[in-house]
Amino acid sequence: MPSPDVLTAPPESRTWTIAQVAEEFGVTHRTVRHYEDLGLVTPERRGTQRIYHRRDRTRLALILRGKRLGFPLEEIRTIIDLYDAPRGRRSQLEYVLDQIDARRADLEQRRRDLDEALSELTTFEQRCRADLASLTT
Image 1 (cartoon, helix red, strand yellow):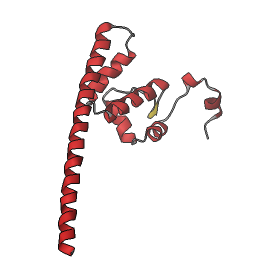
Image 2 (cartoon, rainbow, N blue to C red; image 1 turned 45 degrees about the vertical axis):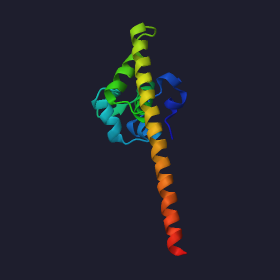
Image 3 (tube, one colour; image 1 turned 90 degrees about the horizontal axis):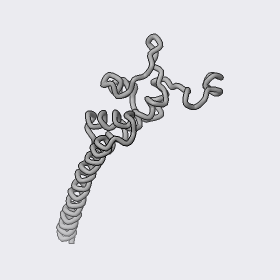
Image 4 (cartoon, rainbow, N blue to C red; image 1 turned 30 degrees about the vertical axis):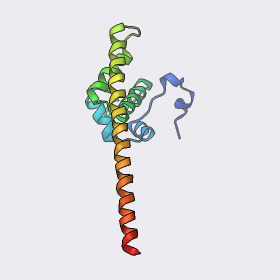
């Protein structure tokens, strides 16, 4: 059960432990520490305990979304750093849009490749089933 101060603290000042953050995002403590070692998240340290704030959780969500979309960690770092930068800089927005376009093109090509591979598998499966049926009759 959360401590009483957590229940009364404003949402923006709430904190989380590494165990809570790891469980929430479905990753291991080691993964969270790895992102910390890379400087992608920067929890507060109280002795040996890591204290995660809302900013860390937001950054972790962005990291994991970027990973799911296939972005390398260095690209994720750049995009996250832009997320923290002041909004509206033309060069920043153009950079992010270029990365989105490149990633979209890559994913669309992968989809075409997967569709083609599935089609080939279906054709091969049909031939195998036909061959099997001719052997049993």
